[in-house]
Length: 252
Image 1 (spheres, rainbow, N blue to C red):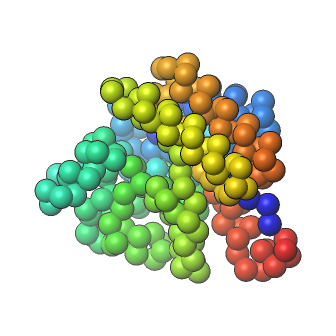
Image 2: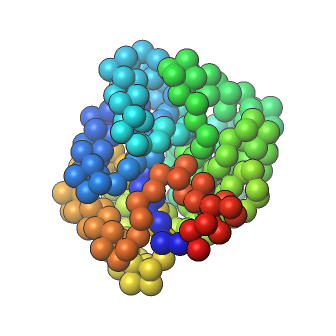
């Protein structure tokens, strides 16, 4: 099977719709489908249900081959986490680790709230990426119970139906602050190495990346490197389907 390139656009919400559109335009020029990670609840502005234009655009994108996936509920950290988890979240998730410390009851409540909004908008997401890629064990159990087909961490894609763990790294910039240049260097170097090895990878695009042309250039260069190396651009949905045993045996 050819290696995969999965490109996800994070933090899709009414307040960031302009950024999602900008990234989709760049990917479409390169014939790369996107997995659009939608924040369904209130986050930095009105919730999804109040933005008819964004909902209509997401339907259009789905018809054109993109995937609509769920990205938490409010995309904000929840109080009450142990000190060590707060420390991890502050470094890796910048205050958005909403599902990092939730128990079963609260995780289920938030997942279902988000799914209800998406269902009302006409979407039936099969994938759930927690904000900051951080989720508690009860959260993952809830996702499997509710019938989601996959979830993700920074280093893996977890097939919730089979339990198989696909170890595929996610490359992501660190826009803003002193780590921005270092993060870009890491993404550039890692992308080159993975492309040379013919490895699968994931690339996470964020709205704030668009604030710096150097980050945009780095992201798009990574996309082109993987395509040139022979990777097949897939959504998460297509990645999971392709790696199920029956599909993998047919592709072998």
